[in-house]
Amino acid sequence: MEETRKKILSGIQPTNTPTLGNYLGALSNWVKLQEDYDCTYCIADLHSITVRQEPAQLRKQVYESYALLIAMGVDPQRSVAFVQSHNCQHAELSWVLSCFTQFGELSRMTQFKDKSAKHPENINAGLFTYPVLMAADILLYQADLVPVGIDQKQHLELARNVAIRFNNIYGDVFVVPDAYIPKTTAKIASLQDPTKKMSKSDENPNASISVLDDRDTIIRKFKRAVTDSDSRVVYAPGKDGINNLMSIYGAVTGRTYEETEKEFDGKGYGEFKLAVGEAVADKLAPIQEEYARLSADKKYIEQCMREGAEKAYKSSRRTLQKVYKKVGFAVI
Ligand code: TYM
Image 1: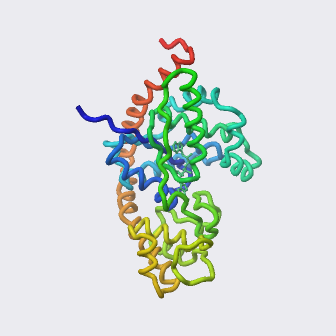
Image 2: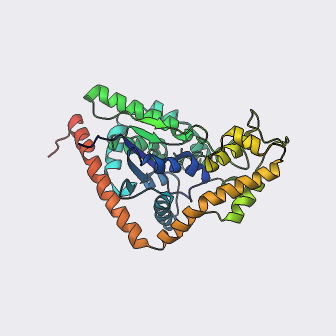
Image 3: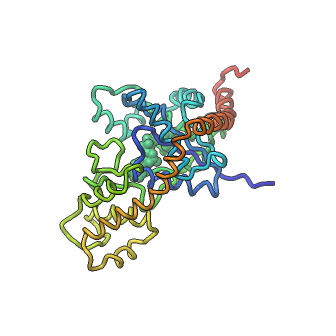
């Protein structure tokens, strides 16, 4: 009999095209982990509307994000790849879990505080309960591991706490998930302000690399990356800009920091930035080619989405039924 493999769940919001930060912090791991785990990946469209979206644009982005996942190497046959709103059980479990989550815990979420400061005109209840929906995403599939960047760590902690609380009341209903956070790429920084994370929603287009940027744009953005006034390519405290570029270079070439230091010994920042830009462009080129091919085939994408939704629904059905029974609903 085949050994049961551990389970993975993760998600990405379809707001704007994924960045190099999303790719190195999370998506590239999603692809690798398929070797050893049963993986379920979702395009988290329900999460996206906590910030006002233009409907046609959001719909387009859902298709784009889904096709990009496949182009990067998420295999829709081997793993479950689906769109969150295609499985209604996320919203259902989220409601139940919200009754087991405290107002105080949600008030402490740094992402809620940041986003409310950024959109003071729209501090909606969804923005506040967003981490509960994320907990539902994870717990529905009984995930053991959740590959994410460091910015999602606090949300993961909340999911764990809610799972433990629920289990303490009703018995072992949920697997308590662990975060899977990469060592050197957990927080890829903005190219314009290396103390901030690279973000899809940054207003300065030079601050982030989109995975669909063309070669010249990628190289130009790296050439303009903000660094310090030193000129030695060494990984050291206080050199946030260079440290970030070294992490990116290491992730796309497989080089350690020491190997990069040796390679650029005696060379300046200019030469290094060009090399980083070229290496990133080389890494993204095959993904972009595959994306161009896939995105021309909307029928195939929709077929994959439909199959993914069906598999996701089936695999989460048991959990929701169990939860409903445990809390006392009359399951018929
Ligand atoms: P999102 O869409 O903001 O980002 C998707 C993934 O990319 C990671 N990431 C980064 N990693 C390194 N450096 C960066 N600069 C960087 N920026 C983003 C994020 O940590 C994330 O892993 N709430 C989630 C989506 C979500 C989810 C889930 C994740 C919904 N349900 C369930 C895990 C499990 C979000 O907004 O990610």
